[in-house]
Length: 366
Image 1 (cartoon, rainbow, N blue to C red):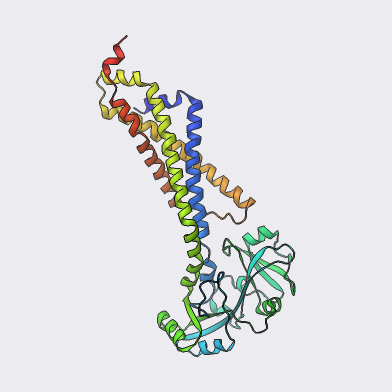
Image 2 (image 1 turned 90 degrees about the vertical axis):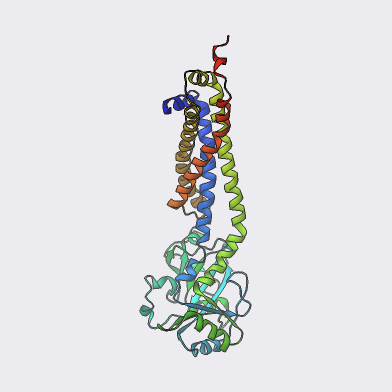
């Protein structure tokens, strides 16, 4: 069965190569789009890594990028007085463009606590650089051509890049961290506070403290750390998920069409052979399995070629376009393999019906 299917496919090698390329294109489209979504859906993860349980913002704030939050300095003392609050960290944040290049970056500065080690951060210097220094996301570093040791011109301050880290890409911009002293000088707003990052006491309940802060402190809204990160991801989902779904569907249809056309053509060219096998007693099920084997062989070859090409393409694209962040996960690869198998099964339906309609007696007619 399998040798017959292989012979039918490899009889015309040029057609086979074109067909494999077509299936590979469908696999690349599906895998790259899904990997791109995975890479972008991680935006906001940096918010969850910051040392805090709750974010306090001005009432009406929806997310860090599409709304402004301005708080009074005394609000920090009011939040600190709420039962269950262990520490309140003032946060200054603003999106701005570099004076020289115009590249946009989301600057964030946190008050550096005296007991920094007690926060249990594995890489505390990423979030709390010393005065005169700045830590930047790797995507922003590639966009701006900066590396560790270089100087960033922020107008009022010239800061040395102390660290380049990953995980601070938010697609529309990237995160960078500097000291609060430098941030206030750059923003030219003395005493500014945009957010408060709250750490809770060990026995405190998150929901209860959040409700107490909103009740006892006027003009603020409270987000859990994960909830605040989700406000950033939500825009990605709402903006790109429908497009991604459509592109995946297009890729699947292209794959079905290519496999189906190739299998159908190979079947038509071998109609006499199938008629002879049918006349010799081959069952319809046996003949269908030959067609299915042809489709599966084509689907698997296209998947293998497409997978390799997708990995290479993702790396090249990320080098050319730093914002093109992909994350190819093993279960997505498995899902695309399943999709390739489904393409093959669906594509074998019409050729199988063609075989079922072959009259065995026709092969003996002159």
